[in-house]
Length: 374
Ligand code: OSB
Ligand code: MG
Image 1: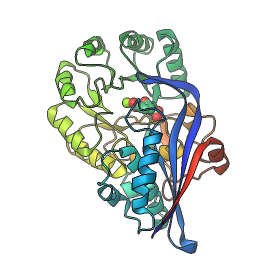
Image 2 (image 1 turned 90 degrees about the vertical axis):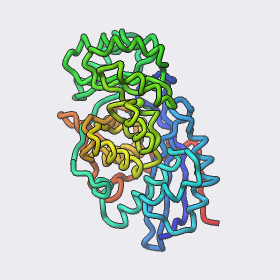
Image 3 (image 1 turned 45 degrees about the horizontal axis):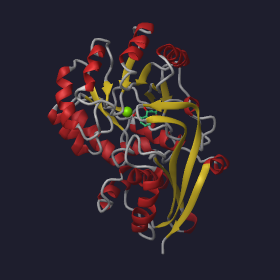
Image 4 (image 1 turned 180 degrees about the horizontal axis):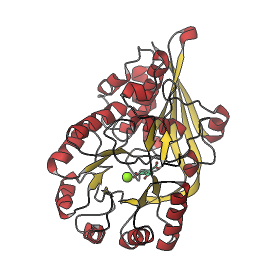
């Protein structure tokens, strides 16, 4: 099957409420949707992939702008007109591009979708997952005050979310977390600093070490695996790495150093689902719990996250919330809803198992380009 044509859509979707982290506040979410056409005549198959790079380089150096550049100038020209590789073989074939995991992962997702649609297999089945629904939680951004944070958390709990993650940053950490913990002594609670601390400033987080948190996510800078290995022994609470882990090698090195006890897996951050699988397998073999992180995905990326989180090693609830937690309107016809037991159903039809709402996609598109083989 040859890759005939790719449409790239730079998408911008209004969030229902602003999302604030230690690296900034957003009212809308940008990403790139890839629409990949492969195969001959009547047998042409269309696959979709979401590149989760955001508008700004706050979470990662990758942005929609860098991903657009890398996709249009390097990655897609190397694939267009050629036989499409198996999704699992893509990352080796893209080794000539250093870094840019999110750009690579967007293409890989579209290849998984095409492969699944051609073989009549769901992504879950291709990845080897067993569950038909996965346990989820909600990631709550920084709020005006500890009081308003407690109100927002209360609303999500009443909607049925069984695990809460709150964002923290220096000056907005201990007080916020204690307010939530005191209001809800029994809930599954974790915090995410998005790389806002240093070894020195992270001292204040010791006040949270007896609050029965599931984990403390990414306290230090993304390239500070070594410093995390000095921090983790100072805490009873598990440190979980997100930004620091860009590959299965990083995951192995972090575990060997004792830098963390849990890993947040995001396929986008690590270059795709194949690398995500490798990290899952490595952690599973060492009895290290993993969970599926989120990047405020559209229905396309959400379907991919749900399929990934069906694997046995995902023993902690994922940052995969219902569509209505994020958006008024999504670009898929499918809207994901929260079951009363804090789970979300995994799509079962072939490939990602979602269908694009083209009218909604058009409304959300701020830029589009068509790439063909030369
Ligand atoms: O650090 O996990 C993070 C969103 C964007 C970028 C980074 C992160 C997040 C979230 C939201 O925490 C997770 C989600 O609900 O998609
Ligand atoms: Mg995180």
